[in-house]
Length: 78
Length: 438
Image (cartoon, rainbow over all chains, first blue to last red; front, side, top):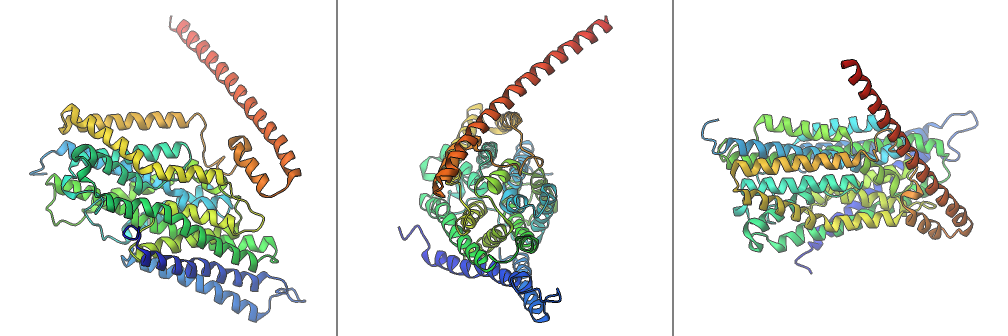
């Protein structure tokens, strides 16, 4: 069986796939929670500055990851 | 073109390669855009336009085209122009058949299957490298959905936990953006990857026919026409496949869609980075299934998924059979230009027949998001109600199932009546024109 499956490549795909493929949505979800989760909107109807900064940091991480992937595709790694 | 050995044969091969490129875009729109359409993050038309443009950009982005097909799977020495033609024809026919049944299946596997079949017909079993076929095509087809289901499940589960007490409205609004971003990435990767396959085939054909020197890079018109063919295919939208992926497997909401697309993009890009290429279709389907598994209260129609897995398993042998038949037809006519014309004509006739068949129950941007009718898949409906352990719902649903079946029956009857009416009217009109002419 082992000559038919490249276990090391497969393991790496699975490992990094979980880190990136499940991690990025999680980061995005943290951003959403900071921006719109329970307790986000204060008594005056606005979201506190700290939460907004935190949320946009999360969204920025996702955007940078997407841009990085585009750069990776363009560089011919794909 | 000086020194071209068989210009007509070459033209037919190039046209067929472009046709394959078209079906490739057309068949794979769903991988990137099905979830965005199903969750209404994008309107159906807007989604296919976005996907088509990104496929086009992707085709121009990276131009590391290798003039090889099925490397390490078939013996490169036996790949002649008729073999390539028969292989392409096999891939196209399989793509169209799976599209007719709304089954997402890998376009590259269809192409490989077609080529393998043509090689088997041309050179016997010795022409195929079975180890390569197993390790590069058959096993990855089994592995890809497993990896994607895992990643998609974990991502969706984490997202659902983190946002379970966020108002649904905010969730939808924000996650739609994330979804569009990650879906775009899948489209871009598809354009880069798959348009290059057709470019490679055309380059190979040009070299084989002596139209360009052996160390030539891809001519600009090849790049443009491949990018255009794929974008046009994507824009036409394989609505049947989109419908199955977006509505048939799992009832999706934005959070699941976003997690599924990110998982797809990550697994596709990582797998090609580590040199263990997985099919876009298998990964995208697996991710969507995972997003159903990871979401509490969401259920997966495993019977639809099962039909899909079955289609994946028979993709290579079926496309191979078609490819082999095309090759035999080509050779038994005597090969050469005449044979290739017959193959091409046959391909057009089959494509047209499949298209006409699809018109009996058309699916378009208008009805792509309609509810998945239980009558369409009764078995899944019962399985679903059993899996959520809700006998009451099951009873109600059974009643609805009967109703849905009745509704469909009525609809069919109404259609038949309408068709009869139209036929009568046409006959009457024809009579009228007859009398006036007289």
